Image 1 (cartoon, one colour):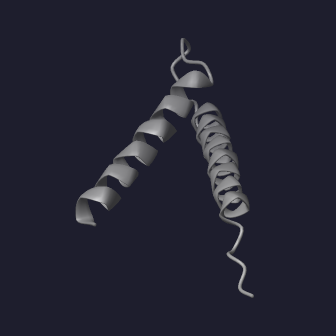
Image 2 (image 1 turned 180 degrees about the vertical axis):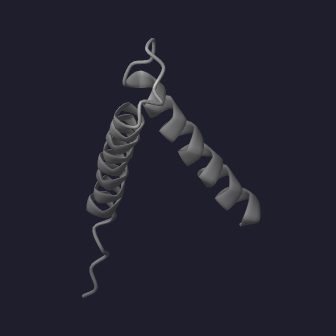
Length: 67
């Protein structure tokens, strides 16, 4: 008897890993800009999150385009 691999746990792990990596990258960018004093005074944590999201979406788009 053959059993299929549990695809739901793999997908959940993949999504959870992406979300954790996203927040780590956004936090790192925020801290980097803050300590380098390159962050505009009016910016909040949401702006680096948007930058990381744009880079991530661009990478995903390029990956799909080249596929």
